[in-house]
Image 1 (cartoon, rainbow, N blue to C red):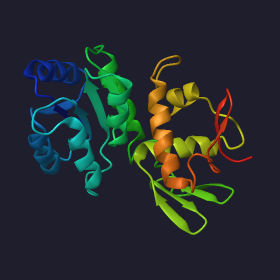
Image 2 (image 1 turned 180 degrees about the horizontal axis):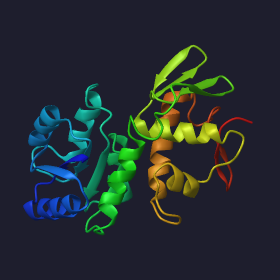
Image 3 (image 1 turned 135 degrees about the vertical axis):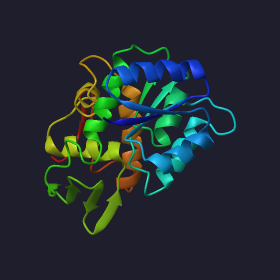
Image 4 (image 1 turned 135 degrees about the horizontal axis):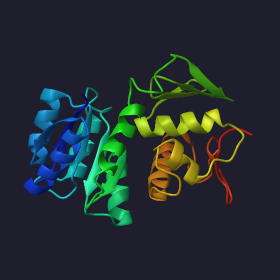
Length: 231
């Protein structure tokens, strides 16, 4: 059974998360502080983390940053479960390395569904089938490792950036809309999902791969239609 670390300073929220996830077949460990969470992650190496933002001493954003800075823990998927749902709060959480977010209060069926989607896309999941490259022009994306080659330059991507590039490169030459990316990269049902997820991760991706992110060469905008890789 997949193992989940749920982190929240509110014990009632943790009880609700445990009840929902155990009922869906997950094994759940909980922590009520950021420092306890970091210790448990190092000890137990959960498959996925559900992380609150607002916590005393060390908030969830800082926990996420520290995990992403640790090469042994950096690829564990993180879903932010939070009452802070302003665009600036969401952007900060995603910029820190979060893969997805869900607002409180959450629908009982949605939380386990979001976690299953993250696990399918995690290393060892659906993308890790063939150790090979997808090549478009001077770009070569390794399918199983989150790295992109542009000429002789090797760029390390986050798990989400890797999935974005994989999807865009598989559809090279075709404009891909934000809605399509939410549906196929994040696996949201059609017409759902927050476009901010795509916009923030695309901005971070361009900061890594473009010499001038304001005038992108590799992932370009097509007005009114989305993003395109290749001609």
